[in-house]
Image (cartoon, rainbow, N blue to C red; front, side, top):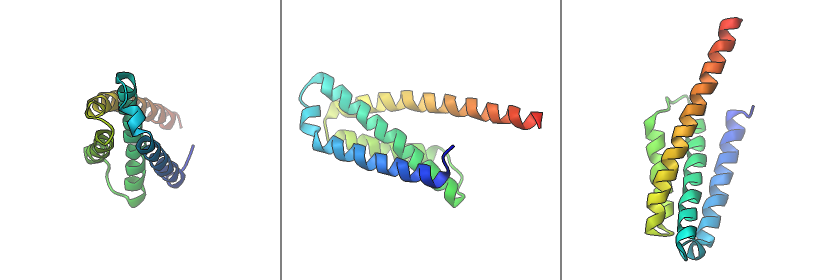
Length: 121
């Protein structure tokens, strides 16, 4: 499993690369309906990696994580989506909600698995 520092570094690098590529190809992403939906999905990936970065940063500093980090990551992803097209903002929000649901479900499963391991020992 990756440590907090390396996960934080990789998520920041992914954030930078995805945002740069999205801004480079924003004319192409705004050219058709399908590409506009793809632009929203790419912005939701920005949300996921930024949420990972913020969560790891807060854990490293000893700050309690919560919904504030989700709101900050979502706001930045929606702003990035807004630079491509207005419809990207809506699709980014919808894809981000789906990703957040899956991340929360995965986190709950991992927490349950760790609790079972600690009960055995």
